[in-house]
Length: 449
Ligand SMILES: *Cc1c(COP(=O)(O)O)cnc(C)c1O
Image (cartoon, rainbow, N blue to C red; front, side, top):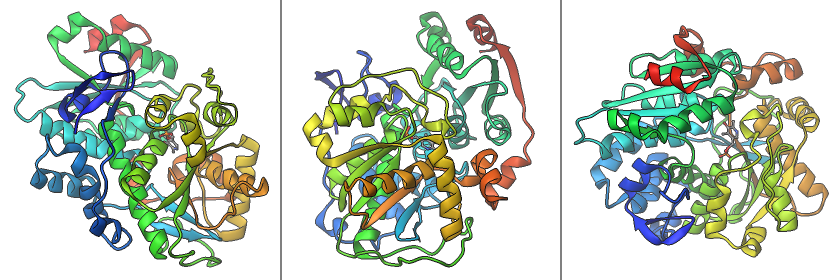
């Protein structure tokens, strides 16, 4: 498979280059030259295959030239000792993406990316230094994904005092090859410092530098896996047992939704990497009817879908802060694959306020006993709104739950009381933070590096 930049189709690169470079030299994002198709035998058995087998079948055509089959087998098994249960909640399905070590869906991409990096660089002698700026969730998933990976050092820059205590422990509690820098400034400062370093030719002569943010194609492709697995299950009328970390009242009104019906996925979105991965799964042949792009008040993409005009803006702070994005970077990938007309036919946009989000967390809990984190609640409410506007019929809808509710307990607990703690997070809570504080100045970062 060749990859080309979203900004020019003239030059293409192989998987290795696309992953290790991250961003194309013209500033565009790498996209695959074509979307491969699932074999018929795979397509018809997605509902009953195990997660790692679907992961292998999904990722293999994208990486074949760079990662041999037996290595990919090993990589998917070590990346995914957990899976993504599809559980019924009320009359809908919820795809729980929070069973990985940092309890947010970013584990799926980060863990694969770390192992892919390690294989692709297996013959390099110099260590690689990865710089990542985070507002919270990404840093934890990347740190965890790369923890103890040979030959790679990760430095996470996060805004001091502006991440939750749990997130800080996930970022700065691991040690070994993971280093944490608490920057005295904002997330934008962190991002600026990381970008400056990555563009510093003098520094790059001294050390091999790379980034691990969500524009990397190696984080995107593995996210198609859980869409295919869940679409297959929904189509076959199969649901998973209740997620073990979110006990509920036993009030489900749906067990096996309508079998033989393709699912509509509602994706709580910020940078739109997750939704883009869903488009890949659909194009590969997974039985998906359409997508709902649910955002908080940062509704650049829903506005685009409504008007045809793309207006990036400065993001506004909300309680679903991992989706506070005014200029979603993966939008460029969506337009590389779909015209405006096609995009409107497969994606419905909707935006949800903080007030609506809080009320939804309360209401879903009182009706079903299910705990939603604020991001996933945006998805649930988005579906409510589209049903009320007669834009969807509400049958066979699957909402992606992007984070465990305990991760956002500051928001969730005042609304519904104590949230059950998953074992991965209780372990993380015991870690001690070991971060170095630096002023938000490039000289300080340079000195540290
Ligand atoms: C990152 C994140 C999102 C947004 O995903 P995108 O791929 O950026 O659209 C939503 N919810 C949670 C919990 C996240 O961490």
